[in-house]
Image (cartoon, rainbow, N blue to C red; front, side, top):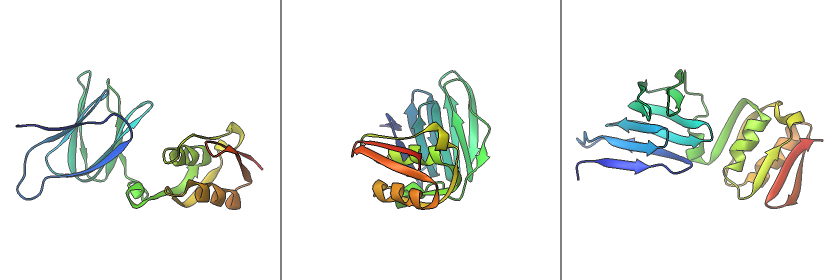
Length: 173
């Protein structure tokens, strides 16, 4: 009764806590540790290598499973594992754009953009190593990943091969 908590099993969650006089802490738990806040707006995302926290308003406390901890302020992003918290960095302009249904790429590696798009699509979407390092900028819809993939071919010398709708590969053109 005196606790509020969420177990994040996979994916990403955007939370707004506090307001209306509430001062009760909300804990977001995953295998790497716990992210706690009493007020503010923040996102927590599980990744294959740890957990990413982006703070838009307020502040959060990160407590790693093995004891390390840190406080992250508004306008910052950091990744943590069960053993420690990485160096905080400023939020990018596109951070949180997924809540509006888009990915904002600003000089992003093509491989990273394809990985982000794959989160919003059933099946396998990947990029070959020979084109993964190319840089790309733009705004790409997550609700229509086929449209986003086709847009990439118009600005980079790449091709999208759809073996089935569940198996897509981005290669050199």
